[in-house]
Length: 263
View 1 (tube, rainbow, N blue to C red):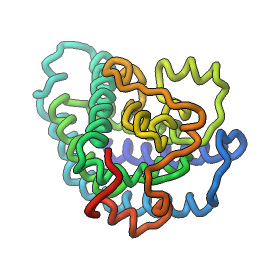
View 2: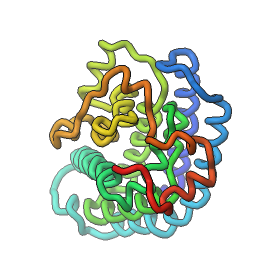
View 3: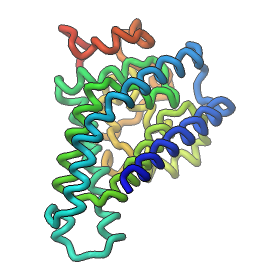
C-alpha cells in the first residue's frame, strides 16, 4: 500500500509540475531575467540528487514510523473516538499547522536558516523554485515528519494525501502565474497563492520574514505573521547575495560558510 501511494505521489508531482510550467509559459506575472531552460536544468538537477538521497530517510525513518502507527494504538488521534473522515480532517489541519511552525523555525533559528536560505537565494521565482532545497533541510524535515507521525498518529493514506496536497501547493504558489486580483483576493483568504507567496520571497526583510503558511493562510492570520509587500518590492526577490543563484557548489556549501545573509 505504501509503495502504491508513494508512486502515486511521484506521478502527481511530475504531472502537476509540468501543468504549472505550461500555464506560466502563457500567463506569466514577471518577465524571466535568466534562461528558463537553465533554471529548469539547474533546479531539476538539485531535485534529482535530492530524490535519490532522500530514499534513505524515507525507507528507514518515515515508512517505519507510519507502519508503527498503523499497527499500534497509541498517539493523539487514537485517543479520539471519531470516524476515519473526522480523524483525517484533524490530521490535515494539525500537519499544516505543524509545517507552518517548521517553516517559521527555518527562518528564525539561525542553524536551520543556513540551510533554508539556499531556497531564498533564487533571485527570480517560478515553479522550478519549488525544487530548490538544500539536502540538509530535507533531512531535518524528514526527522520532523517522523516526530509528527508518532505524536499525532497520522494514518498512512492521510499522510501521503497531505504530502501530495503540500507538493501541489508548493508548486502552485511558487509558479510565475498572473492571476486576476479579484480571483487572488478570494483564494488567498483560504490558500497560499503565487502573489501571496511572492511576498515571502522578496528581498525586503519585513515581508520575507513573514507569510510562512504552506497551504492554508489562516495560520499567518492567527499567529500575526502576515505582511503585504508592495508591487515594487515583489519585483525584487532573493537575498543580498545576487551571485549564487545558479551556482551548484556554492549553494551546497552555503550552510557551512562563516556568514550568510541574516534572518
